[in-house]
Image (cartoon, rainbow, N blue to C red; front, side):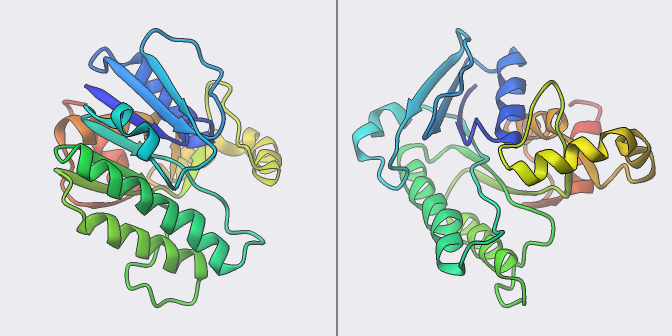
Length: 225
């Protein structure tokens, strides 16, 4: 299986990249982003581009993929709605429109977030934009498309968030995370578990197109995972 990975330098993307490189069923991982990953692996190929809205110059390098894990995103904190919409909706659809044309048999996994608003009419700006993005992706003619809505994500294996506020929060919360995972097993997922769940969805599919944290856990807890 050949996997295309957007956002491989972010916290979730780092976890997805690690699991792809460890999976014997994955023959090639190609990352797309504005900065290199810094990872060296025979299975890894990288496309580094400043312009993530136009893929014409690299279209030939985006062909022949079975799955795309779209982990690229930004926090809405401090962003006007127009800016958040451009980075979350417009950038995602620019990539997806290109990929569905080049790889119509591809499975797409989009990392969204708990609370995303499928009605696109709720009071929370970020949730409306995420819901609009999900809806647009589900209308595209991919072989399959899955919207992952994790809640709390615990970084493992030395992975760190790129957002300073989140890094501080994880540092403070680290001592109590094991207890929280026991109390809230369906709300806290690790970066490793998210990466494994993406691979399961790409290989075997999932029972629904929008997966909340508990549904993501069921994917990786299934006997064949």
